[in-house]
Image (cartoon, rainbow, N blue to C red):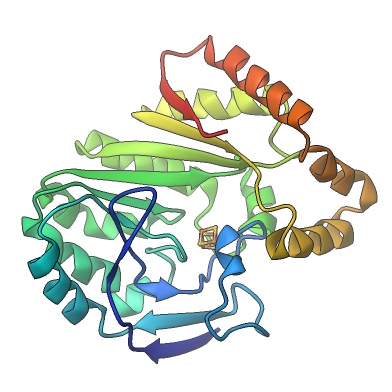
Length: 267
Ligand code: SF4
């Protein structure tokens, strides 16, 4: 893993998802095969996603200065990295940001694939309005080791979510991107929602797979062809059509009739 300490120009950036986004790192040790963040390169054009991390070493100073000027707005972690990827154990940038945000009057939202977030439970409980989201793409731990090699296993993420929920933290699951062939059958969707229901999540956001036409899609294609072959890749090609999208939506809505669970379809 190539780790580089760098200076950032600002800590908070405008975001379409919340008012502001913080990325303590660029690059992600989780190395998910479908990661959308890899469309950004920032000088890492030749390096494979998942093999480098830039650590924004002056982030906390920048954050303190910006907060004095900004004063309000929701903040989320993160858009081009996982804020609790393994390197966070060493640099603790996410934790230090949370300490700075203890007096923040607006909401803070964190989305991760790591149970390292539990380390900061005491801090999280002190924030005025916080929500923790776990991304779940695949339920099966063995399959997840292939698709999300550096992330906490899905079973661990769900246990972490349950613990946070029991400690009074608001939680959500981002169920996506739903992978064609691997997680898009009605049985798989039902299995997933049974688990989500069991852990008592507050809300589930569901999304289809995206970025099949760009760099992300090209690298995904190479990976799927090499690992699983043409037959499986054809499911991904088929997933680009509107007909697939509509069928997926119907499958999800059909499954959801069995659950009293708050959800939002993002497609
Ligand atoms: S955890 Fe998120 S940012 Fe990190 S590789 Fe996976 S999808 Fe990308």
